[in-house]
Amino acid sequence: MAQTARPVRCCEISHTAAVEDYLRTIFKLAGRKLPVTTSALAEQLWVAPPTVSAMLKRLEASQLVVRSAGHAVTLTAHGERHATGVTRRHRLVETFLVQVLGLAWDEVHAEADVLEHAISERLEDRIDSVLGHPTHDPHGDPIPPRSGQHVEAWATPLSGVAVGSRFRVQRVADDDSDALRYLAERGIRPGAVLEVMSREPFGGPVWVKVGARKHALGPMLADLVHGEIA
Image 1 (tube, rainbow, N blue to C red):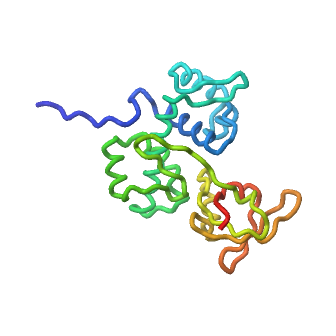
Image 2 (cartoon, rainbow, N blue to C red):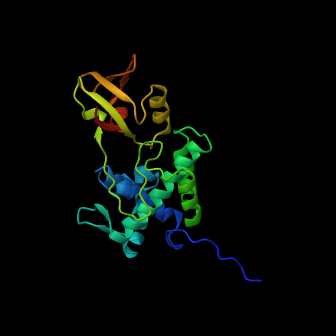
Image 3 (cartoon, helix red, strand yellow):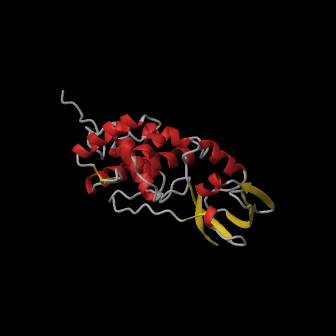
């Protein structure tokens, strides 16, 4: 009896989960205009710098990244294509877990980190169809299209908004589940409109008003919230 071919993922089979994690993390840091260095990747991926250096050599040999004389890491066109595919799967899975399975937005990032490596192209398309072809995930991150034509641009951070402004939240960085839970409990999520009331000096918190309630957000939290002047 002929065997049914196993569905092939959009990334080549030789690209392990570890490789995909690195590509997506490089893509994420570059999109936020943050330095993409060995130390930054080690911090994001919770691994030792020598481990990062070894993986970067592997990625460079596979023509997925290039490194400058200053040790900054940049995706090649080939690497960006694969990173975009992994990012698309990650954000589709997060959206599915929230909209279909009812998980909270602070619970899905770690789950998607695992599942993004396991779904086939066919399942990816089915999830996209069931969800109605969403353009953004629960954190406001844009979901790259299958075409791969995608620019990862971040809007203005709340930490940089002038006092007295009305600010519409578009996107919240999803790295810290505790921070996401804290913000959600205060009504700060994509679509919310905040009023920037005041900012304490010497690196103190920014005070915002959400509806009738006022909240103090420290610099770290304010940097996670991105949007536009409403």
